[in-house]
Length: 349
Image 1 (spheres, rainbow, N blue to C red):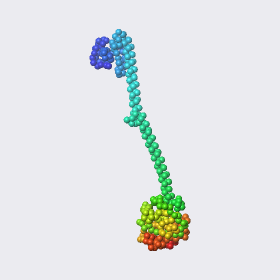
Image 2: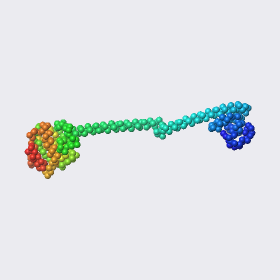
Image 3: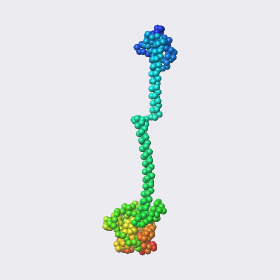
Image 4: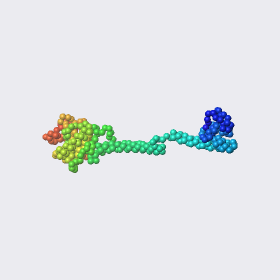
């Protein structure tokens, strides 16, 4: 609006030199130059023109050359007021935009590619999903722990108790010391993956007065995994090769000190022709012509005999004998190291 070049005042025709002492009409068609004292503006109006940017001013010629100076001053005041209002509106718009920018900085968009409201919803859903997943994980872990304890207890009951064997669970057993000949631990048929008998086995008349010990004539075993394999292979041999209805023995004693249930207490075995219906058979995993049975096998034998007597399956005055003593001519029954191990037992015959 102000011009620093020299010019002459359109009212007094005097030369206007300094820029601060002159004023130019803001009308592009007019463009007249005036001394400040010739414009008819008050000092306050001059200050407005200096301090407020984009404020327009019209010279007397633009306002109307036929009007007196007072009327021109009034019209200029109205013009200045209108310009001031426009400027105030511009300031308000700038202020509102500044506030929006500040709010945007305080609450930035959570995702730059989505509207702010949508990104907040997405984050809320994600947080809720994570919390739900964590909660489900805790519930699953707790349930698995409880189920695992129940399953372990159930497995312990399976190996220590068989409803057909009438063997009660001993609740005082130390689970870290199971087997090993220290306690009587049964590994029943499901545990060693037995196949079902080919037909229903006949019942044994109880109690029996004869218990026959004999070898399986296989490799020995020292762990449950090894013994399970030996027992399973023996059952397959008895059924497939010997055409028996099931594994031949009532019980199989492993080198690990566990008792593997064959036909059990109540069914007739197929261990020795002529004696099956009036005896129980204890078969020992291994071949004992040159090797003695393990201390675990001997220890668990005593426990098994005591249990049989207490359950009424074995007569209190039973006779314990070796298969080779009853049938010396059958070579598969020979196991001198096994039989010699029972030489000083009270019921051995």
